[in-house]
Image (cartoon, rainbow, N blue to C red; front, side, top):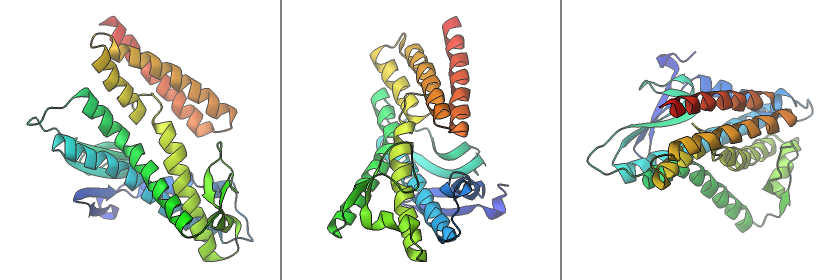
Length: 264
């Protein structure tokens, strides 16, 4: 499914990017259209808008990691999107930024934590810029989504209407704005949960090691197990079966890591 022949490669701000064919499957699998297709609306255009938003949001997230690592570590980062194995051999599920270690510059726990946060931070800044453009265009704002989400999100009213509009461009724009804000805000916040190996878990591990060199990593794993279990329960109660199983798996994985760390 990820044949090198069909991998889309390009450079963004000097950073090599590889988009695997499986990434487009991921866009469709997480779109609102698997459970909600209205024959009276141009859902194909909506799907294209959602896919464009997903691509931009993922690229922005990984670019935040890449540029931070390049600036702080002098690293040579590479970005891959999709599911499977990237051309450089890195494992990827959604998106990953990898780089060759550079030993000429000192790497601290604080800098590692900042690089981990930079992905979600770039997404938050992207949403702020989008809302600023909407405000300058004279749009009113509304809280909530026509497509429905677990949390309310602020949307430009004029663009949110496009989600259920019969006009192709309105549907494209509406789902693009909806998808970009939803992914950057909701998924970005979830990614900052202190669950290893998510960004939040890596931040907790780095800060734990900084504050308590002896027990910091173990304490971070305990927190990771508790948070992963709580998120698994939350998503299961909300009907998010895939997310529930994902966090249940991370709960088991982190518990196993905690057991190994305790035996040492």
